Length: 474
Image 1 (cartoon, helix red, strand yellow):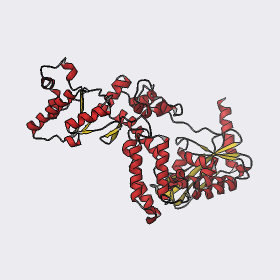
Image 2 (image 1 turned 30 degrees about the vertical axis):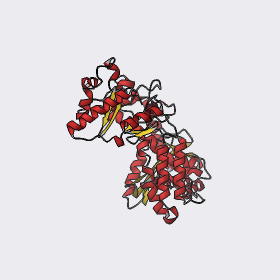
Image 3 (image 1 turned 90 degrees about the horizontal axis):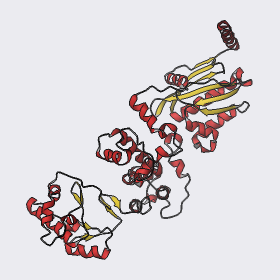
Image 4 (image 1 turned 90 degrees about the vertical axis):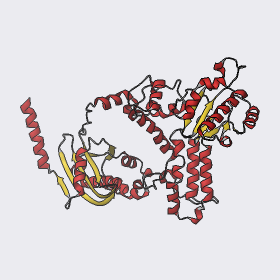
């Protein structure tokens, strides 16, 4: 713990300690150079005061004399029983002896100050030990076998999930700590704290949202990353805040952009290095990784070009589908459009599906597309590409074992319908799926379903007109 700046305040005791001449005068005539005997740094927060001074007993006594003078002048009493003396590169026996002479408590590093650890090894399990102890203390007082499963879920969401928030918003959580917290939570949830019990569902599945078949429990590692990412958001939003100015001056060279531009790890604190790690990792997307591009798009408000839908190659047809829901779970609609390699519309549909969540609506739309394509005359001569803007649903079609149990029946139906044709499901952007999205939103309030299928005569007529127009241009 080494002070780097002296924080000036307007409090009475702050002004008193800023008056160096009074402090120097208390040393008496036998003092060597005055500069060696001043209080180097002070930090004030609310009713707490943190002082840094030389490792000298006479220096400590003089500080106590000044604080006693403050008591007499202001009427505010200094509580030495709650005060602690810590030594930096000072032997513990010396600190204990000085503390007994000053009638205050002695302490050593690592310790806690304002709820945060001081002196603990960076990014270590020792740093997070207070959180683990609070976790265990809470679980000790709860009898999981006396609570219903719903009651345990409520306690996990309302109490256990919020315990590490203070630490998680500042320090990166080691994988060992996140695994330990998840293990303690899972044991309480399945009633296996005092005895062995079977965990019927994996922790990863329980952390999924309810719409995806999970319980919506807290993923501690993911929540920690989200809280650390908030500092990146605050870096761009809080342009005039003190902490932002300090970071910008120290690491960024008075950077005024909305994201940190200096992504090198040299001469940076380990906490700030971990906060900006998503911007410097090679696995990040190009848009996030190139913060100068992000700054240019936001500050200059330039229009970005939307990704255009591309027709499939010859012998393939594309079915863009989408689902729309009113709220989280409510009235839902599905829509889709099938087009060939000449960008000709072959099939359109827009339907209401009743109450559903967003994920179910996406799956219903894909299933409807499979039905319509299999019943169409184009299934015998073309392969099918289904494009969806929900990457999670696309991942389930590529690896059905990852899908929640409640959705596996719909996946099985899709595979059964299209088992005789060549088909695949691909992810696409929302801009490419705009037509399907519009049809899905229209389907929410539809009383009658809308399905349009182009006839072969219609398709031949469009092909003839297109060839004639091209020959006319030539």
